[in-house]
Length: 215
Image 1 (cartoon, rainbow, N blue to C red):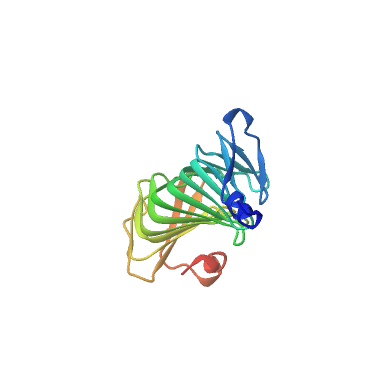
Image 2: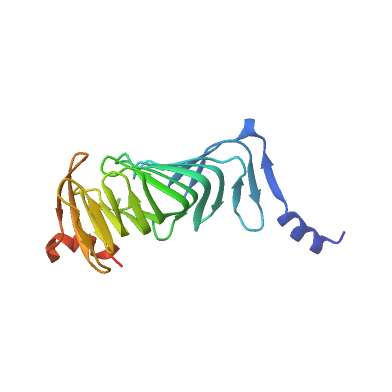
């Protein structure tokens, strides 16, 4: 084989490490611990973890585990059949999770569910976690069992224990059974794990922190 044909062939191969040799990897500020083998593609620089692993962000307190993972240097970490735990105690599960290193977001899709101290059994078409601010945005057919609600989107603010539910929405609590049309918003305030108020006419100041996340 001619030398000029040898390098492309080698570059298309992967380097594999046996499970017993797997070591933690530093990736975009994350510490990734493979569950088994690691396959490095010399041409693309991507690393596949066919049996998954765990990625830990010590700065944000986020821990992401997946049955399979792909690491794309300078771009993203992709996990399948994933579970993500936040510093605030939230647990997110989804078929597919993408940690975008450039935007600092974690996007979940496919059988998405989320639970934390305020909301339980939340489902949605997609959920996006903003790593820097901790905001969580669930959108598309949002439903939860506690509080009993449904809506177009639900945005969580971890710093103020407030959330905004956008219409069309319904809410069934001890504070009544408000409903809202498309484009309307209701501000939910929590005390610990309990919903303490539901304001159907929030003022602009109350919504200011949520503005970057409201579509």
